[in-house]
Image (cartoon, rainbow, N blue to C red; front, side, top):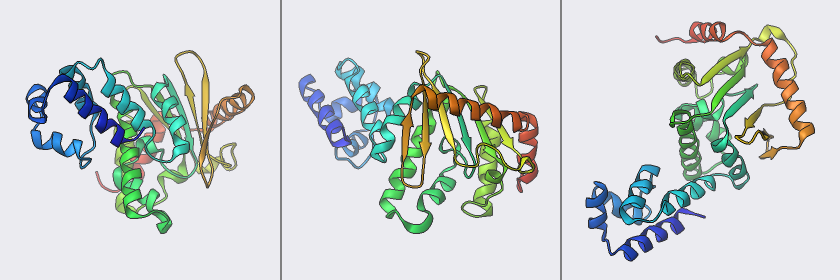
Length: 261
């Protein structure tokens, strides 16, 4: 489903309820101009807008559900499956050997990563950055997953986007690590070889006890949930966590690398 279909669903719901754009604006206390911008595709609807419209138009939550579906389909098609797991997870464990995980990236850092090499047109870069930032909302929702992030020390030293962008990103890491459901560990470079050098991964634990893994290569990412691979990645996680600094020592290292207060 795309946003054009969502807009048609909104218009159909308004028509069925006999409510004009101005009438909907009054009911949900949004400006008519903003509703017009949403219905013409110039502004993206937020979940807050969808929920308020559902209540005003008595659609039984249809618009909110359709918006969730449309959101999952934004970005690369191969990422849609993982977004579903990510949103449903009760616990996420992520290891990254090269860059800050997407859930923790600043906008400037994300833009530098996505635009590297000039392989994406500017409009696509904007869209992919927006999708990445929207994913981060799960860290601040009412029932966020428990998140543990393991980063190789090279991640917090590589000047992605330049020194200023990295410095702001280090500040973001320190801030996110203060959330009660977020833990951050650094695997120091003096460990030498470790089981994560071949690539990063994310382990998602779902409410029913199922586990799924997200793996990414140079071309695309894919979801794996066969028991043998889950066991292997789980063992790699345990090995990496055993090599990592404690949370307090990891944050002290980031503070030492940060240039500005």
